[in-house]
Length: 205
Image (cartoon, rainbow, N blue to C red):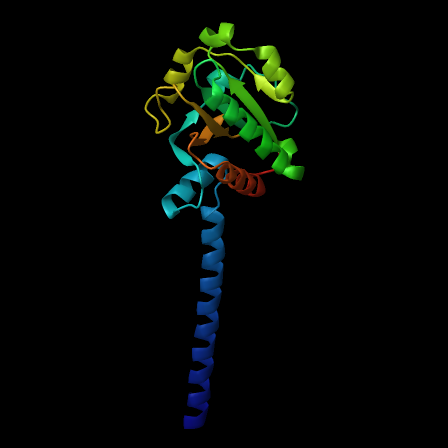
């Protein structure tokens, strides 16, 4: 009788262990499903909370750039964007940024088709910018003049707001959300690594 009682106790203990293991496994799976971000913005917000290895500066809060970009024709599949803005008359710093972004675009290899490059010069500077030369040097660059006031209004209150005297570039999601920005002091290799990471883990629309 005592031996049978001991066997029953061991069986119950074993059953409890199995149930505990199942609860832990299914709990982890459920937590994973609940934590998976559904959009690029949610994913970047989660990365910001948990700590990131991104090389650029996070735009906080995320900025909607559709007022500046929505009028630019898009293909059937919306693309990620590297958007260069600021600078006076596309000076040498601006030229360096555009060349850097062109090289980075090429280095993306097979993922380059998921990215487009856009330059937003100030409409007030158009008379001192040689647009034909820019188009010749950067044949795949979309040039779309804007009013500086419109850019200031979009960036106001965000971590990306600045005086626009120097040129910066932004990483913008396919639905026009600016999530990272880079100054001329940032290493171009950092932008490349960030783009590779974003393209790898974002939906291929």
